[in-house]
Image (cartoon, rainbow, N blue to C red; front, top):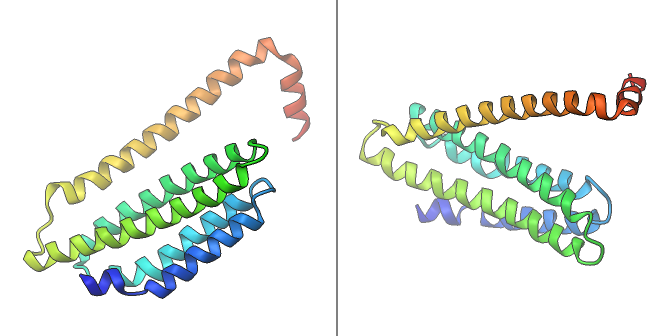
Length: 177
């Protein structure tokens, strides 16, 4: 497991440095730091995590891959919202954007490497999946679908509630199409 944790250390450090510099350079513009962080997360997924997944048994690989994809979506969305909120902070938002970008990238990458290392240890003990190994990703997937449905219903409700209160909103938005 030490090989997995120490492997690709140079690659991870270069990726962390690139995201930090990218977030620093793009911190004064909306969406740039978010795009840099999401690009860094995707690069970590393909450059670090992807090759280590090949060492797992097929069932465990599928379970871990689903869990890591859901984690990537959650971290990317939270980082996006955080970056855009930090755009509104006048003087110290740029420090927060760099810190948030690094926190998101380092947190995801190191958690993924740690998860794969523990699953490799379980793979050595036997290829049988525990209930938690397939139950947690399915539960998170159901939660994600439920939150998306709830968000859609909330937006429809808000649109209908504001339809009568703000008639100019409907005319403005419909004029975009």
